[in-house]
Length: 104
Ligand code: SF4
Ligand code: F3S
Figure: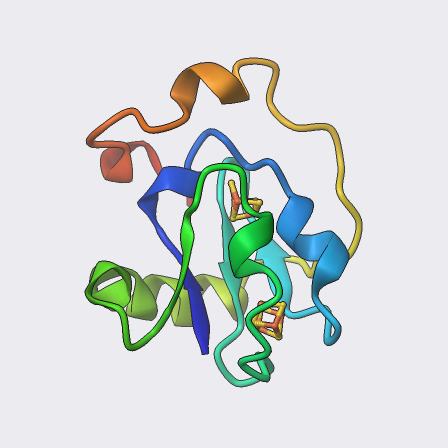
């Protein structure tokens, strides 16, 4: 499956959800995750993310986030339409060390 990683945190642009053919994104307060059991590996979400936060699970950058996507996709509500992104989303793009800011 594909995996949402750290750079989504506090950016949450949501362009990804609009293109997913199987609607397998789930939304937390400041981060989105992909349900690994529902993702069909089509790859269309990867280039849509302005923060370049989505990678295939085979990519090393995904590794620490695989469990997080699995865990929260079972807890958070499904999201299928782009909502209003955070007002300061652009400011948070590419900021380092955002992992600790993830809101559960
Ligand atoms: Fe959805 Fe395809 Fe992205 Fe998987 S790879 S989350 S199926 S758009
Ligand atoms: Fe996050 Fe990128 Fe989607 S910032 S909400 S993974 S478009």
